[in-house]
Image 1 (cartoon, each protein chain N blue to C red):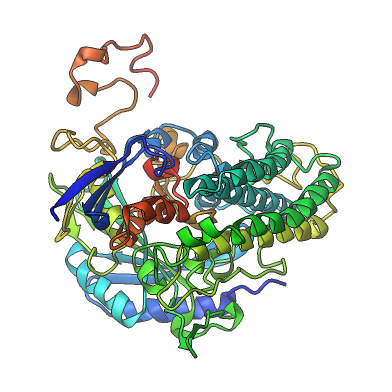
Image 2 (tube, rainbow over the protein chains, first blue to last red):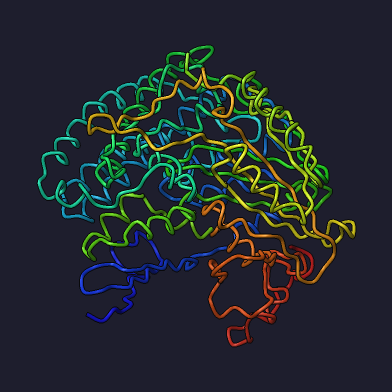
Length: 378
Length: 219
């Protein structure tokens, strides 16, 4: 049969955003793919060159609406490397709680979107219900629903509010019980199993060479995690281990990538509970905004010739900022801000994974890698 | 306590790699000590000339097991010194990831204890900076065939900054529209934000040439 190119996107349920996947098909079989990105390129890197270091945080929130907190924290760690700021330990704990809650919310958003992709509609409502609990907690910290603008250079915007620890413990414990409901909903759904098992194999060595990290890599049976390999924040103080999945002989399939995210939510939830217990001066103490216990003094200028970078474990893989000092206003702004987006690298790899499968498998494979176009196009 | 990679092992591994790489021509490697919050980080920080870059890349991949290319950044320094008008910064990581073994028909996941990693298994961060002299067509050698992860990073760097990668197969616009004029790379410093110089890219059908009242005052 003759081969032909079809265009999936920019408006297509598979894409989870605006981009085009060009697929070359031979009958029902995918022969070749070519992703076409950049539909919502906003030029964040250029905008950053004309903003103070403190102003950039808000732009980083908007890189990914499903995982705003991890992105602004990723930026903040790079700035602190550039400006050489030491962060109070209490602030590090609060950051960890915020980031891990955001990771759960992001994975829930993914799970909720992945269900409808492959014919499991009811799960969407369930996941968004639990995501709402996480967003309520984050709203208490940051003040808004999606774009929190929570971290500050040298600490955090606000301390844990009164009663936060109690509410967080209740909600996270409830969530830990409800994860079992999702597992039942997915693992006992024949449609879900048929559509995800044995599709979209990927092997760890190949993934690393292609630049794929995070949950997608750990699904392949490797326990590499930036939080343990290049420890930042207070991850070294908590008792936890990154979850690992046992893949099949051919590599990790879509089902493994689903399993690893469910396990990661569980690990993150336990980490939040532990951090609430271990936080210095206790979770029930409250400090006013700007108190040295939660916010260290930071310089506002970075001289020319300095640079800062930080690898960060985002919900979707390794995110990273590289900042060169010495921009406008004698170093008040970065001369160049460069963003490493995990999905920008993963989408081309995911597109290669589809070759050899049927057209109907494309949504299952693409969705399992958790694409987010906001950060991809920047 | 969490199981994380120990700082002393990481520092020793970084120093071993830096001293081995320093012996190469045109390569100046050292261990840069930084801090993340309060925990120390040791980064292998390398300055390399553009002629020796390809040899350094191959050496890193083959002899030092650097298996992961994280990011490629291009910087335009129009006011910089004539021998550093452009800069390409590569970020690598050594992950030490291998495919898990198959025993009795079952894959056995590799669960390494990060506290006990030694030698070439220790995770490392590597930063390579390549300065380029003043030129109209800056270019360095591509490493797309060594780390496939560098492929789209290099495409993006060319698209936005205009630094070309010699030997890169399939170079094209990735973030900007495909019909973007040849030679337009928005992260070069002659392009200012906000209305200025928009005529370079578009005709004025949408009124982009109308300047705001504060033109020239605000970036």
